[in-house]
Structure formats: C-alpha cells, structure tokens
Length: 250
Image (tube, rainbow, N blue to C red; front, side, top):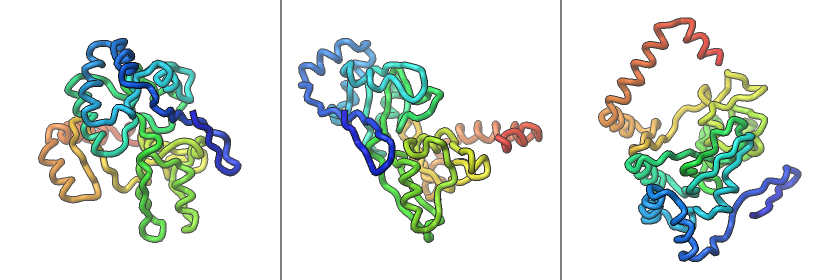
C-alpha cells in the first residue's frame, strides 16, 4: 500500500503491491477459486501479464469495499492497461459467462464499483488526454481525475461540465458512467449534456468511435439488431410526452 499526498489535497491511499508472491503461491490461491474462475484465469493470463491479475486474499479483500457501506469481495481483480486488453477481456468474459464490473476510483455511495466476480480496475492507467480549440474541447481517458481535467483546462479559463462533490477523487470513467452532475451544474451541464464523442468497447470486443464516420458505419452494419432495439426504446419514450419531460428534468 502506497501513501500519496499532493499539495493540500487530502491523503489518498492506493493499493499498489509489489507482486512478490511466486507462481507456486499463486497456484495455491488459484485452487481456492471455483473451477470456472480457475479456467477463466488461465485463459486471461495468456494476454494479460499475471502480475496485473490478482487472486490473493489480501488484495481481493482490499477491493471488497468502495465509498459505499456494502462489501463484495471479488474473486479476481484485473488492472487493465489499455484498449487492446479490454477488447480481449470482455469477449472472454462473455464466452465463459463470467460477470465483470468496472471500477475507476470507487467513490460512489451506491456500491456499483463492487463485485463478487471479476473487478476490472482502470485506476493507474488510461491517463491520456488531448485539448483542442483553445480548451473548448477536451478528450479524456477514464483514469483521469475530475480535478485533473479541470487543472488541464485552467489556463483556458474553462472546466468540465460535471462538478460532483467527489471531483477531487472521482475519475472520468465513473463521471461519465454515472452521468455525474453536481450542485452547480445541475442537469444543464451534466455528463450526457456535455459529451460530444465517445469511444466504446462492447462485450464482444466491437469498438465504436463516434467521432469516426467509418467506425460509425461499421457499427451500423455489424450491430443492426442492437440498433433496432435501441430505436424501439427511443420511439416508445418519445411517444409519451410526460416521460420525455421527466427524463429531461432528470
């Protein structure tokens, strides 16, 4: 466990253990898992270094809590490094019917960053960003803190729309996934209202980059059934003015 402190910000504790456990010990830990998770692990370490796949009881216990009062101890914790790994992990999980949960900072009070199956941790990686048009547009990977995004934009006298109370500690992945807003931005500048483009990795490994016309066209051709279902939900909602208004207010 490493203690980090930056300026006057509160102290934050991150789990960054040196994986000193030898492979023999890891095999012993593996034997304690249900058979389907043992098989999943053996497939997983073919493309994710075993040093970033944690199954030892202490590490999984540490990730059994988040900012909520719930506790679920994951069987496997994976520190996912990049798009390529995620694009292989998700199809593998789907094929083997292993549930996965995503986690960045784990600051939500509702417990959605917990799992008793497989936890995919993005904290520590996914740190790239790009600023365009004099700060009018910023592209962020999910492992960046909200406060860091605002720091990048400060010289342009701009900030991101969402302003959750946990902005010093929560990350862009959670901000986007939860449609975070805040006391100041309300619903006018929440995540959904201020996101222009997004790159999405689906559970079968399909990648959709909404900023790329070729990617959008490929997705339209490959995911016709999914798009049809979404369109049906959209049409059903639009047919009910009261529901449309309620969603807008939310």
